[in-house]
Length: 479
Image (cartoon, rainbow, N blue to C red; front, top):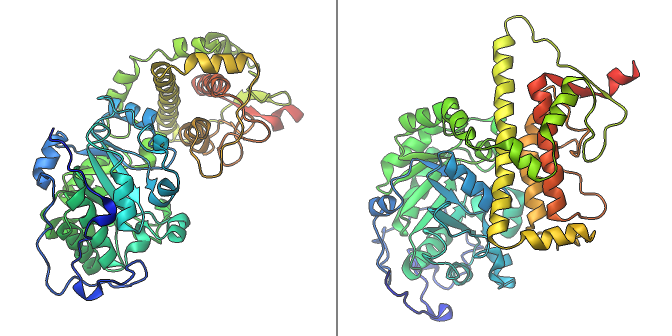
């Protein structure tokens, strides 16, 4: 690996394809047109691969884990790699926040930097080229395989911070952000975008991204106002038009919920592969056929893992089978266990498969917890947490916006068990989940070791109820 070229960020010349706007504040300048004369791709001061060469270094991937705050953290990246994901992304790094907090903990330390989660791409979001370059230079080939710029986030936080899809009307700035990283950063640069108002605008936006020096492009097939997946479908036909209009590799994002939709999306878009976000965060086996997920899950001894945290699963299972309520971490003292209602005629087979899918999901959650435990052990954190638990210490709430280990545990518990299971008969709201599926965080914050124990117990309790075909009911106890 060649030695990186030393640069002074404050002295670099920012590339532009719009000479008429030099000296203007590009963050405030709205322009949705390609340059009058499309310039050649800027020359990097580093040796950069072509798009095809870059994909070859990644192993020519076809499946990707999308960048997601709280979700695509180390344990999720490791587990999804175990279940068929070729490339993972870090959670989005907010350039403004990282600039005001130069501590590397939020960027470098949260990268596992091992073969288990590589290849990995670190994603940045911001609207100032020098700041983005300064923050991005904190990582290199030791930490990740490429860097990505977020032009797709549709959330209000992106609107307030002026990044993500809210840069779709600022084409000169988009060009400058990509070109600056391409010219001065040693790693390949990629981009992720959403569709614009028209297919023609989306195609031109993708062409601008390519002209600025991006080696790869991921396209989400919805616009920034289409946040609810259930209300709109990903427009794979527009993604295909984009793929046919650029020469760099293109990956499709949106409505990839299982192995069949992954294959169908590749066929309809002609893309090199697909990216999945929410589906993978809820079910890491999204990209694999059910039989393969079952085969890989069989290698994980979930009963032994629960026993390591003082959870006697055989006892829990026996109690559920006998109709006795198993106390949850928060306590269930006013209800009882009743059989799951019999499915309607003709729906028994589909219901059985759905329950089997939830059983796999809970086991994957327990395996995710085991990966968390393994990572902590490797970093020498286990003993410290055991002492904290024994002495009754509690963690003080972290500053607003700061990602903590507990926040990740809470979010993933809600994603993998909470929200999905609220849609079926098993009632986990009487456990440690709120109505929205997140672990209740009122009062003091227990240590991560305590969280692991109660989440392992939660997983065991839900798993036993699924396997025994019963649910918890307060109403039945009062009748």
